[in-house]
Structures are given as C-alpha cells and as structure tokens.
Amino acid sequence: MEPGSAVPQRTGSFFLSLHPNNSLSRSGFIVLMSLLAGFSFFYGVYFWSLGAWPIFGFFGLDVLLVYIAFRLSFRAVRRFETIEIADDQVVITRVAPDGARKVETFNAYWARAMISGGRLELINRGQIFEIGNFLGQEEKQEVGEILARALSLYRSGERYQSPSPSTSIIS
Image (cartoon, rainbow, N blue to C red; front, side, top):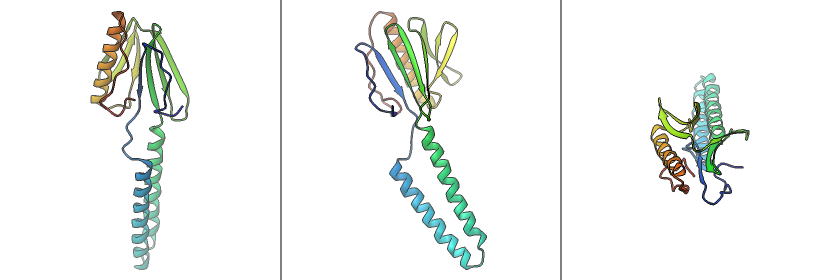
C-alpha cells in the first residue's frame, strides 16, 4: 500500500493517516539536480582549464553527496502511520519506508491522547505509544486534539467521523 492510497474504512469508525512532510516534488528534484550538476560541471571545467583539476572532482563529489542526501530523504518520506478507532479497539499501524508493518492494538475505552515532553502519545493502562514522531510540534498538537476528541466521543458512546485536516500531514 502506498502512502496516501485509499484504505477501506468501516462505517462509524475513526481513521487517521499521518505522513511526513515532503518539501520537494520529484520534478523539482530533477530540476534542482540538473541545475546543480550543470553548475558544477561548468565551473569544474573552468577550474580545470586554469590548472586546478582536483576541483573538478570535488564539484562532482558535491553533486553526488547532495543526490544521496535527497534519495535518503525521499526514502524516509515513504513511511507513515495510521490510527483507527473501531470495534472497541485502537489500532496503530506503522509502515516503514521498506514496507514493513508493525501493528499495535489495544482497548479504545482506556486510551488517552496527550503531548508529553514534545512527544505525541497514546496511553493505555500504563503502556505508552508514541505516534507521529516525524511531525512538527504544531502538527502534533493538532493531531493530539483530534485524537483526544475522537477518544472522548468514543467513551461517551458517540462516533467521531474522520476529520477534514488543516495540515498536509493528515490524509
């Protein structure tokens, strides 16, 4: 399952999918790397013509390191988390960049959402589950409020439908 893909949702359930921010699109990456490679090649040849040929290699090394850094960043963005409240359960599913899944399930009635020490946590009978560790502080606050409201409504017997988010990290 790709991040952002549709996930079946049961009627009356709460579903939230959290994704890391990605500040650069694939086409932006191609444009940036093309400009950087062109700039580096042009100035590398210029320094080579002046007799400073080792600089040509350092320009190439710079381009390679920037490329590797962006590839690692794009890989990290493939991870995401989902939180579902349905059938008296809270189900947290973490999907790693390589597609490996880790699912944690616990009783929804005892669950509490809170922010502690800059971490967004779901607490259930002494167990602490950190969620959204890739989110910024404001995003954690928004998600924490949404989860706290959903759990509160669940405990009161109402069903809270999945929200329309104001940030791009929630889908």
